[in-house]
Length: 182
Image (tube, rainbow, N blue to C red; front, side, top):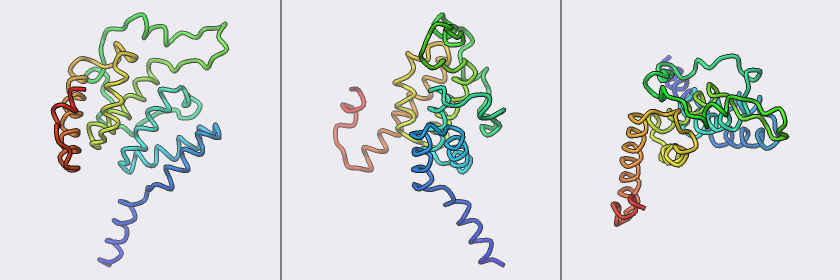
């Protein structure tokens, strides 16, 4: 019985791997966003940082709609807009919620979909310690003006510095402070 329990634990921990990520990327490239969503949500539920990040980008890129998923309960207690997101909206954020009838481009995601996408990338950064997700959030902060509050941005910046220092230390890279300030 103990062997079976250990086997189940092993399967659960290693249930999502690089092959699954590749299948998700292939689905996105084939414009099969529903399949990609299913793959990445499974990975994110298994706490795969890259899957969470990719799921977030799918939301931000407008590749997930209400038709793809009716609700996202997978974020648990991190889905708290009052503490993560800014209460103010600027013109840029409001414009993203409006559909331009004359545009031939894809309709940008609603503010709510953007928030869900950011929450998945935040999970990848802050809960799953994925350096690239933290860096992407910091890079996108101007594009997402008004969606993340100042306290959350400070937490992301601190997490980025912590993970960067760990990365530089683990890889014997010198001049850590100089590299972080660039």
